Image 1 (cartoon, rainbow, N blue to C red):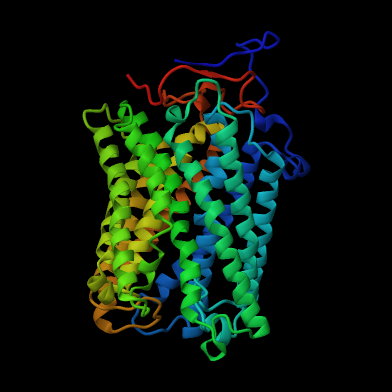
Image 2: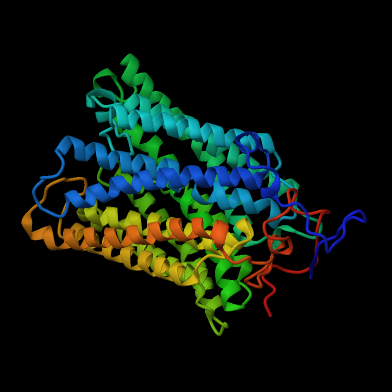
Length: 538
């Protein structure tokens, strides 16, 4: 059993002051060091970036309804999909779950009163906001037409857009990731409650711990890569310019050495969310807890040795291609273990199709499709045909949107009663969850067919025979937009009008559910004592 010990000066039946009752002045929020309030600062910020990037995506889909480029010019289209990618990857997907739900919940789940470094936690948000606003100013004022990857030599020699400013903004925001990762690692190592051994940690904590390791180890590589772009573009030194002895493929190696681990910065926390939701709403302990832990750490490890599968058609060594292909097949194994264990957890469970569970089951379908198509792309011969087509776009979005965004939405609906002390409209939330599932499949499944038929990505006009699939994809984007807008409405409504939730409306296990909702300022009056295994559902 898990118990919370109260001091003699505090009545266990009294309601402690919650973290939201400490004042609503701007100063009280902007200078807070409470991890829960900092999580809200991040949540508001990433929501703004999300809808900004989503608006760009809708314009892209409107352009692609007709084969002729009749809404946007080629140059404007390039800037639009670059804006969409930069904003969604760097300013939404990477910080989405760790900076919001991770920030809010990780200390509570291990019985701590706050993060190990509260002031660094606040600083990470300021750095994130500064980098984000700087980048937005760049892409709005001058535009960026290189895509979110900033590929050389286009970004260093030929592009006339605001590449340097955008790269500087992404460089700045990288420090926010590093500080968040350091906080997660140190907090998990040093602040666990008595009795909370490593093999009693919730899987959400394990996922964010592994994510922190990837953030700290990989992000500096991105930072130095962006510095090299700036030096080459501003000073003309020959790092990537072949005419000066450089190599443009060096940029791809450096960039993807960070950016493929970054995929797991996005997806690992979502896996942690699903690992909390499925046991709760199937009333079963997690099947194969040790296997789940080992697969989390294996995914984090393998993420550093597969970057070359982005470069199968770049002219790299045949032997390197074979090696990267092998490791890409290998990294699918721990992901398959997790999918098998989630499915086994559902087996003979008392399954309740609550809103968080709908999101979790949607994650299973979408992540499985994204993962299996990733295995297709690991095959060298097949990748030659599918590389840089819409098949890649579909695969990426099934993982990133179907995985990371669905996981974020599931976690938000699961822990919303804890964050706010209020319930949301369950009928509307069910509609939103189903709209997201239908919209995602309708948007991106046709793109698999487009890519297999040879349609290149990033083109603003296309042959007429692809029109029906493009129209279906754009229709799906409209349904998907509904799945995003509805939660913004009913969750905002619930803040004032929602039914009060109580401390544990889902009858879930875990230390975070042992506190009132919303939680007290310091989470626990005294350090809790853990005396049982995780996920002790009977």
